[in-house]
Amino acid sequence: MKPFINEDFILPTEASRILYHDYAKEMPIYDYHCHLSPKEIAENKSFKNITEIWLYGDHYKWRAMRSLGISEELISGSGSDYDKFQRWAKAVPNTIGNPLYHWTHLELKRYFNTDLLLNEDTADELWNHTNEMLQSPEFTAQKIIEKSNVKVICTTDDPIDSLEYHKAIKEDVNFSTTVTPTFRPDKAVEITRTEFNSYIEKLSEVTEIEINKYEDLLAAIDNRAHYFHELGCRVSDHGIQTLPFEPCTLEEASRIFLKARDGQTISELEEMKYKTHTLLFLGRLYSSLDWAMQLHIGAIRNNNERMFAKLGPDTGFDSIHDFSLAKQLNGFFNELDKSDELPKTIIYTLNPVHNYVIATACGNFQSGAGKGKIQFGSGWWFVDQKEGMLQQMTDLSSLGLLSTFVGMLTDSRSFLSYTRHEYFRRVLCQLVGGWVENGEAPADYKLLGSMIQDISYNNSNNYFQIK
Image (cartoon, rainbow, N blue to C red; front, top):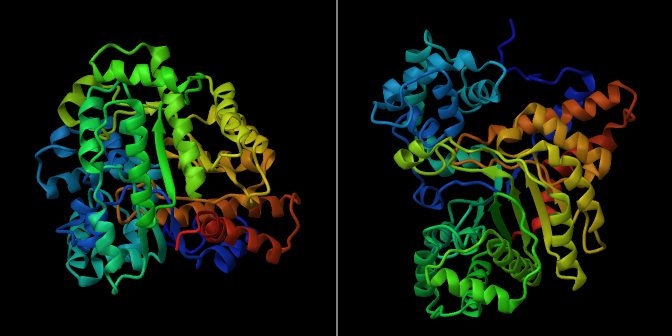
């Protein structure tokens, strides 16, 4: 009997198998958005056991375990690493139908070379097997990245970050992967958050710019963007619940900023105006630097107040938001395009109901500046599973050009998550191979294979221009 993770895993047709094995499989990885720790890369971190590398901070797994009624102590709490792994092993058979079942066994196969299915009966054997392998010098952070054939990694970094670990990585002659920062200024944009004023003070300290007015804030942001640029940054990122677009003058934004600095309450309209003006400033800044701007839209976060108070953010209590997007998205793009200052942009949606809205908005603002300047980003977070990826790529191909797509990213904090690129490529080949089998695309494997390789790596390499 074939092992579950076999060479033709989720490749149901001859065409899909040809496309994957002959074209996609050996392409390197360009991970242009992730949450890996640059410190752990720079220090070439070793991992004490499978729980540390696999379960620490993985809110995908945590949500599944909570659904099974497992005690929080054995998820994110004080339980031992062994007990946490045991409970995850017991949980895994119940995740069939969820991408976690596929991801779990792809990681076991690719990194630990085992065909064992994780469950309560195999837990001890896999605990011992994986932990023994993790003691090898071949299982450090850098070695895992190299084994995964990753050429470029873009981490996610706050403007006040010193980027000291990026400097150390750059100077490490024994590590060949390019690791660059990504500029994520959310804390300077989110004017109604309680930590806004304390963050402005930190930004002032780092830049040595006294931030007394809004124009000072913009100067400080510009200062840090150029600092990031010198360290190889060519990408920004924004995590925003909804995309604001409320026309706002500099004078209005300045008044709203001073109100916030004075501790006064900011109305919802004022918040949207401030965010719009600031994001437009950032878009123009990115255009001047020839950066790509990423917009991650549609997460409603920290919905469980009791657990947020106990565990903090990014612990598995976020979900999909529903809101109107079309007018705001087109208006935002148009405002930047008026002065030809719309940067390369990738828009990700957490709610697939917006797929057609985004795909058609992208088509309004393409230009001769480059292939696929405005990108409909890959399935993200709750939709980075097989059905979500198929829907995103199908909608993109129906309303735009799949051939220009910059493909997959991990969006992960785990060094074992590079199998998600393999998973994506298999799904991509399943989709295009299905078109061949159905007579919707010619069986021209040179043509289709070239497109598959572009989506897997080449388009990203050409789009971001990271050296």
